[in-house]
Amino acid sequence: MQKLTRRQLLKTGGAAFAAPIFAQAGVQVAHAETMDISKLKRITQKMVAPPGVPKHELMATGGPKIVEVRLVVEEKLVTIDGDGTTMWAMTFNGSVPGPMIVCHQDDYVELTLVNPESNVLEHNIDLHASTGALGGAELTHVAPGEEAVLRFKAVKAGVFCYHCAPGGEMIPLHVVSGMAGTIMVLPRKGLRDANGKSITYDKVWHIGENDYYIPKDADGNYKSYEDLVDSMSDTLEVMHGFIPTHVVLGGAAFAYTGDNALKSKVGETVLIVHMQANNPSQPHLIGGHGDYVWADGSFESPPREGLETYWLAGGSAGAMIYTFRQPGLYVYLNHNLIKAILSGAAAHIEVEGKWDDDLMTAVKEAGPIMGNAQNFPMRSMAPENA
Ligand SMILES: [Cu+2]
Image (cartoon, rainbow, N blue to C red; front, top):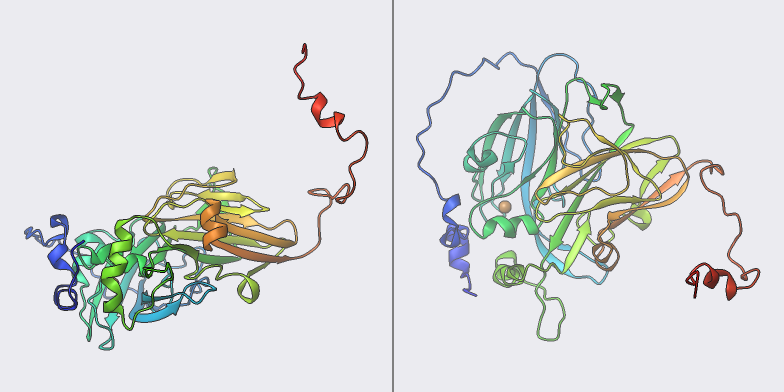
């Protein structure tokens, strides 16, 4: 594979390797008349690190607003598993995934993207909830020491991923290095089922799933690097093999377990938003269900009801709602069990409350097999007329 020199990476952001479809098209664009939004109410969204989400109204009060959002790019070394494996992450606001943006349909999101001088690479943002200019990517290229402000109207209701997309090989590299997050655009009247009945929730968990491609040395040990640029050529080489070394929820293997386990209680209704910017996933709640599931992320269509696992396309977010019925430990995971258990794409949920014997009872605890252990299972399996 052709190695990118440090100079090429810094000068061009990898544009020397850019696929032509991401080159500036030079299309002439005339501007249509826009409505006067100067009188709209402005609110500044207080960004929250995942799995938390910003405070928001389930149903919008008043007319459309301008929601001001600030994302600061931070390139930093992070630990991604229990063995101490490190990766030079590229992040929005320092977290993987990036923080959730929340607004209502027809609100305007005014996003300030800041790339501090302390970073070395150019970045931008493509928001799948927006319309035009490659999702805003064309209008938000910021070199270290620059910021750009993008305003877009949230015309579609749903959960959508956003990600960095600076050009060429830098697009997948920045995404698999952590630069992706979720924007949730709620219908102004809130979520509804197929009969138009209101669906509410008590809280939201923002789960980001990431696939990582960490280079190994000749002995098969994960390599560590002095800085981000040093790690890039080797990382791209692993990416060309398509096989991730890590698939994780919350930025690191088993990030939401132990002291960081998600917490709920019987009777509480939780909206779980799952985002994967680069690969498909199969979100599943072990011990529960999706009472309501928006698998493709669109809130413009009614949710499916009573699902076990749903299929999430790479490059999207999906959402499910569940009201916990039983206390105890639940596991929320990608039901590709190899990714979940061997790699770390699994989270724990600890639920408090009273056990419901009607829903589940241990009729007999594990103990010696009663009756004729040999005949009992074999009889039913023998051919009738053997
Ligand atoms: Cu970037």
